[in-house]
Length: 204
Image (cartoon, rainbow, N blue to C red):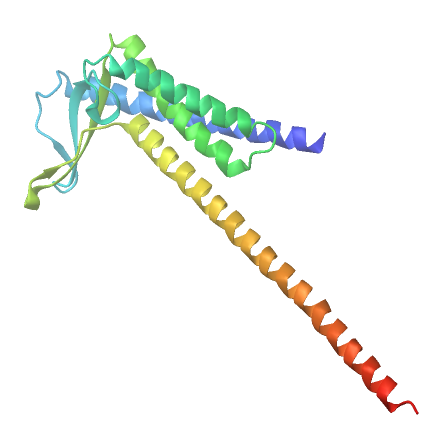
């Protein structure tokens, strides 16, 4: 009962994270469309010098402009939704809070971009432009939903990896302790056997 109640609280917090991501994503996109339309008609607006700027484009592909106008986009979205749903169901009643919050980030970002496609005729508003002018490096233009998905996936992978490493290390420690426990009784048995033989030799 307590575990189920705690799981429902975690689910509610995950939902809250998803809602916050969706609201922030849609709000920033609406501001960009309102003040920077039409797309690609205004110079980049500096946020952090010329490294991080705001530049409005319409993206018909996936996150970071991948699979633009490609049927593989639909398969990618469906596959990602299936994987996230499967992972979430596995942790439904037993998953730690951090996993639930990460799922909230990923789901919120996915819903934010899906809302764009549904409301804007199949494209997504992208506006975050990172570049390094000194080496002529330009990263793909993205939005808050893309960032939320990417950070969430990275954190999920990181926590799963760390969890597996802890389990592996714990199993190794247990096996070493088991070997020492086996060795200790053996040494004790040898000592008791030696004492008994000494006592027998000492008897007349």
